[in-house]
Image (tube, rainbow, N blue to C red):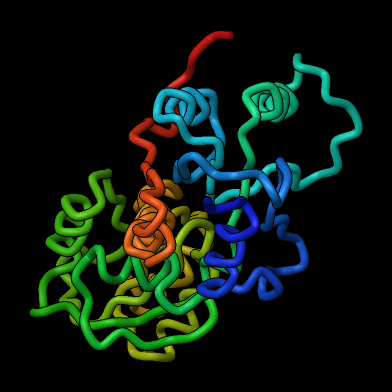
Length: 256
């Protein structure tokens, strides 16, 4: 049977945990390395709905993109939102692994999965930035509509909607300030999750269209690509490991 440690090692081979940024908290966050895994549930974040899904699917390991406990927690008092979620995981005997900035920058990780999701070709880049080519040139407005369809969420365009775009740069999540690096690689538009007003103004002044698609929509393809890789991992196939993906909307709430 597969253990939490073996799943951790599987992720580490693809997105080494020692490449995470200093502020990050990726890795095994809840549970024991030697626990036998009955099923793995993938999600962007730990929420009540994600825990409910994992329990319903018989999964005792959740793998998320966003870690918990970014800041030190000194008390597990359940009137605190994060503490309550951690207590739920512990009571349900569910382990938690997070792969965050290590997965963002890894080959085949979050940003490569995002590039694939919107259909870019000849993708290049390193670190957290990717730049690729559309199959054909289109207006920025048409590109925003295309990305909205591909990611299943609304896209806000900041810049000239009539601008013709062929090369698109990106950095998922809160990556708006990475646009100059993509522009230096020839990107005419830059896709990210969140764009502050002053960054959009500066990009527009430099002829770069900004496309804001939401934190969740730009990062979910990456964590689900990791789930797909685990599903075809020979050890997972051999042991018939159940792998599932969250279908919960990020802002669904349940009063508890």
